[in-house]
Length: 337
Ligand SMILES: N[C@@H](CCC(=O)N[C@@H](CS)C(=O)NCC(=O)O)C(=O)O
Image 1 (cartoon, rainbow, N blue to C red):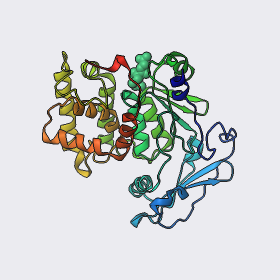
Image 2: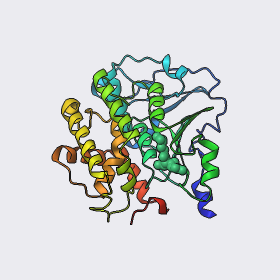
Image 3: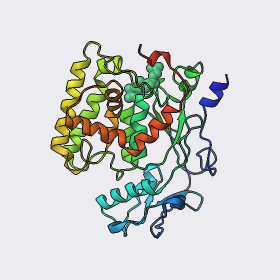
Image 4: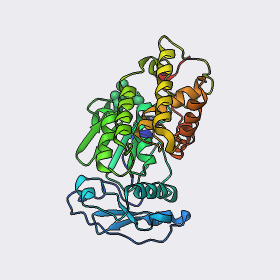
């Protein structure tokens, strides 16, 4: 009983910035300001969260190098909030600055029991971080892109699961994104919705050809690789799975995934360490596969091994895994012998 109470929580606000504590947020007109900041000191990065009146939030971006003309980015999460917001920065600069913002903006520590809370009207409902591969995907994409969201963890298959998930998810599954009265379920739909809210966050590649391929391989992940997903469930804490999980069809799935990774790295990856250079939603879709290959000791060629190392070293992924490794809960359904 105690476990149920601890694990199934709502958004508990740090600084009182939850949706619940600011019920008028969506109704008020959104004001936009540019706040001129000097370079942020990493230790007091919280200065980057400003309140504008009662209803608008501005995240000032550290002024880094040639991003000096871009000093703020809207953290509003409604179309209305973001559509009217323009900056003098060009898109690459804007993206660069947002990445800088992430480095310089220490967030509230992740807490899998209480849910991570920031000043946002987006809430991502997730399952156990150790097991929930689908939850990891949008969480990673949003977190890496420095999109603010509260998180709420519902324990998978806990005695309270049915009731708790039934209250928020039409499909009875996690992840679910809550945005005001709107509920968005299904991982790809969540990624696309976030991309609409934050079109400059770099969730998909900028180049159309790359973007089309990124969406295709994300869909292939979403719809396929059932053998791999069945026989090699994500389980971040298990270090004893080397060579295991090779059920029927798994080798074929591994071969196709590696083919995708090699192809993307060679065609689109020149600008960085990820499938399309910079980390994007397609990488987030494959991140749980990277962990499965890692924990199951799948042999990879150098290209795929280097790509896997890049994903495993991504700060947002490290944050997720650190939290996962602290979780005490065992889900027998997701443990393989
Ligand atoms: N197609 C869904 C899959 C979501 C899913 O299967 N989530 C798992 C947790 S990783 C779940 O909620 N399982 C609960 C159940 O199957 O009852 C998506 O893309 O989000």
